[in-house]
Length: 370
Image (cartoon, rainbow, N blue to C red):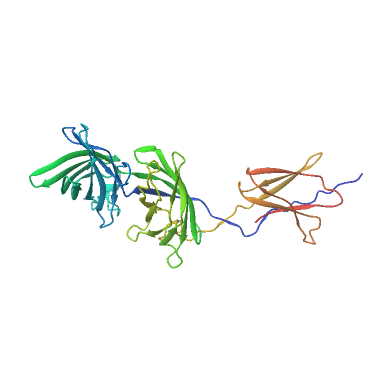
């Protein structure tokens, strides 16, 4: 009777493979502009709109960058009785950005979890009507993304052109940033929800390239595209990110959108700030894992078993799900010549491979990880 030798299964080996694990940080993004709803005055005869675009009303009070707290907006003074057309104007207004109760380096004004109750001043001009100073009273409760701002347009110390009460919104998003640390770059994905309006989402891929001279402290966010809850694409440009020396778990930089509100006719709400906080420091060297050199982790050693059935061989491979493995075979161990039988990516921890019964001599198998 002819016997078939099915050979020896060689336990799997590794080719020096390593694996970079996914990690998670917390991200917070907020728009530097403030959204104002239409304001009303006590007698309801007039209303006031703010806008940051030439055509239409978008409610935007935007930073002018004349100073850290300088903001501006175009104005539309509306006659609710329809006796005359809206009167255009403009306003320069200081926004109260100095308070920082939690001492995290960010103004309470743009942190929804912090309360705001303060005043500020500015100047205004309505074409052909009047000009003067603006007195603003701001109020927003901790945890609320909306507040109230009262604008008093003063012609002089004794006379007011009108007092308008507006609801304003802080546009803040928070959520996880899942990332894979790397030697020269950090790749990841953010999934953010708007504070107070969780149905509004913003997210997508991010790639940070480490600066060669300060790889742990300076990174360059590469240009990319995120999507919102309507699957609209919002693109952003490349920008510098720094690790805060006073809060070393934090990274921050500008998120410059080409257009932050795609529902208006012109680009607007495009100046944003992105803050990333990563308290994880696996090796305890004082550098968060986000920008630290990744610690290589050894791949789990795979294992092979072989079972003979009446019509075939069943080789069972155990290893890391999602990892690529090469199954090699040989007819002569002494010669050391191995050929690739197949390459496969595990979809289960235990995966069975059917092989034909060998003929013509012994057969050996091993598996390697590239």
